[in-house]
Image 1 (tube, one colour):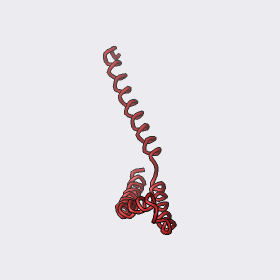
Image 2 (image 1 turned 135 degrees about the horizontal axis):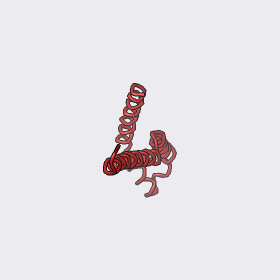
Image 3 (image 1 turned 60 degrees about the vertical axis):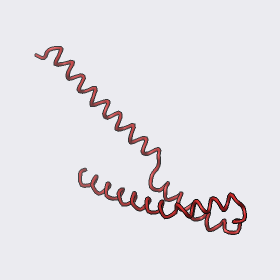
Amino acid sequence: MTTLADELELLKQQQEELEKRIQDEKEQKRLEQIGQLSNLKKLLDDSNKYIKTSGHRTQQIDVRNRRMIIFSTKQQFETFYEILKKQDERIKELEKKLG
């Protein structure tokens, strides 16, 4: 027969496990809300499209500034995208092996 102290300890452990699961689910939802790789790829494609279609308006200061920003960050974001894409593929492979 278990004592009240043992039951209380068991309940505390169950509560900690549930809180951890809740935190994990919240983190997973947050990551899903932030976006997926497809969103980053879409932003990169939109930037490339903007560069291609805005060349005739480079006399305007805001267009020129935006083009300079895109040109200066394009390579970093494409590299970042490729790294994330490879990591995502590795994670999926590991999940298949574990699951």
